[in-house]
Image 1 (cartoon, rainbow, N blue to C red):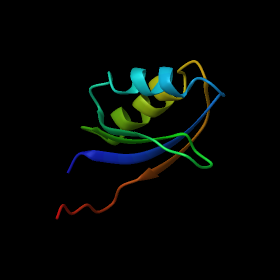
Image 2: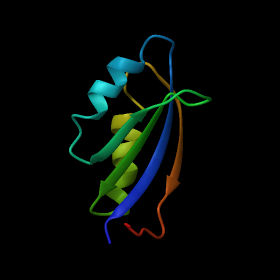
Image 3: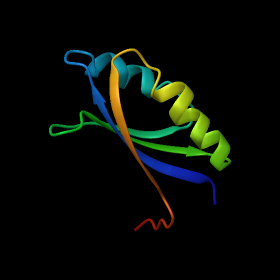
Length: 81
């Protein structure tokens, strides 16, 4: 199973759309949701290894201009209906 994670992203005010549009361009991003609440964006990501996943989150997502904070949950089990 590839390495998967759910990443909650908190953005600077007014940067939500820019970050959303940048995230959908990353090939590792499977789904992106703009939401209301404590976090602004939810991202479902997948990479071939945990190292690739860590690099995606730390080197690409967290370094996007306007990203304030992230909270990452690593997927340990997944089942589609």
